[in-house]
Length: 232
Image (tube, rainbow, N blue to C red; front, side, top):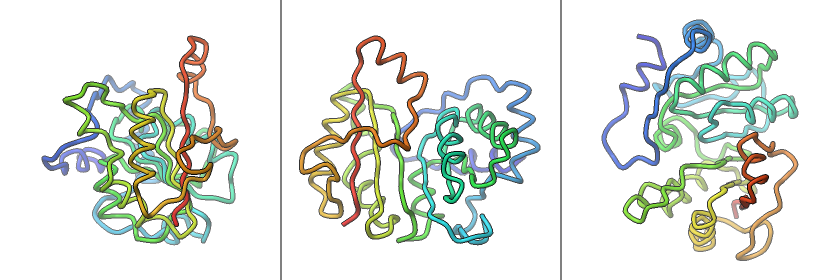
């Protein structure tokens, strides 16, 4: 059993903000998990040391739910003087990102395949992150499922603990009711200041790539809402 499979088995029961839609691993993705995980993968067994992980001291950005990893890899390539940690529970996306990192020679990215909340609680030191990114999380649109939305007051407080003073929490969604929910939660937090002014959404920062999914939505007239908050 490899590290990804051990991480998968380690999940315990509680309300989740995700469902494991595993999908089919391609042979290339499976090979990447088997051969590249020791190089880029991170264990959930110990608190993370960025210096030991990356071999240097640099600003660290953490992305929660990176999907297929295309945006994470693009950001890492555009910011070689920063380090990036990605968290994703779906192994096909993890496998695809590992292949991209190896093909592009990106040494400033490391990956967890596990629940993001547990990683933040157990593996990420307090007061250490430059940015936390949460792009297009599951909006759980049905009323009965809204308790599963990851952006809740307790989550905002957890994010605040992990960010350095002045660090940024950047969210984006293409579901307006979820954007309104995010805004309500974050405006109520005493730990954050809205970078665009109280009660306002943000323009998309240049560092956030526009995904193919987002471009397709824009062609269909769908909106995208960015929210950028600074830890007080």
